[in-house]
Length: 238
Image (cartoon, rainbow, N blue to C red; front, side):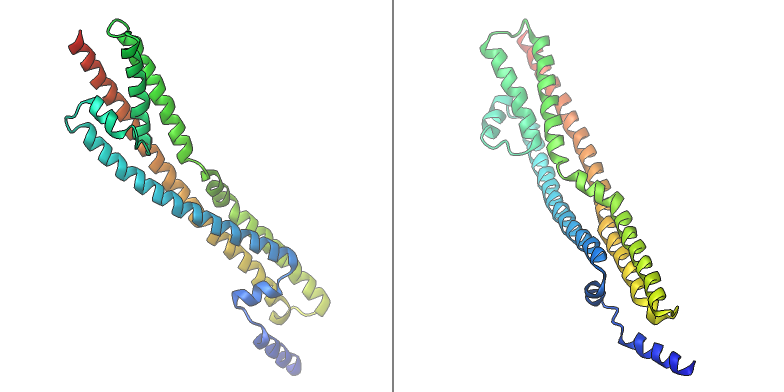
């Protein structure tokens, strides 16, 4: 019994529990699961960094545009200023509304058909808003999927690792740590990878959704203010 214990101790000392060693000695299905989670995590972080930069740039440009909008310049002056540089959602919404307005002016629909013109402007600008929001939501589904399923995929690797542990027990007829330790560690290692992949994806997905909702409300407020300004201009023309 004492010699068996020594042999087990020697086996334990020769086992390496570094992530690379665990991956190399893991069974093929566990390797595939670990690789899929690693690649998913890399892609998720690519999306996170890209979205963070986009939201930062869009919010900065929105601040600048709103400052120009309320600076006292006429809407025609603002239109000429941004028509060749409408590279953010608020400018796109403004341009879509102004183009409908200019069409109504050129078609001499105003001021008699002012109510219908304002209704069409509202429809067009909200349609542009929805399109811009949909564009901001691109690739968000992957973050949601990884955030909700990454742990489950990791648990699948855990189950496979436990099955491997039982096979090791049956082959060695030994329930000591030397027999089951590596397989159990591999199982927990895959679960850890699943957590590392899913937790940031879930956190940033929720954060981005809140940012998009806040931005959508802000753009909707801009549309309402823009329509009020146009309505006042029509009142002066009447």
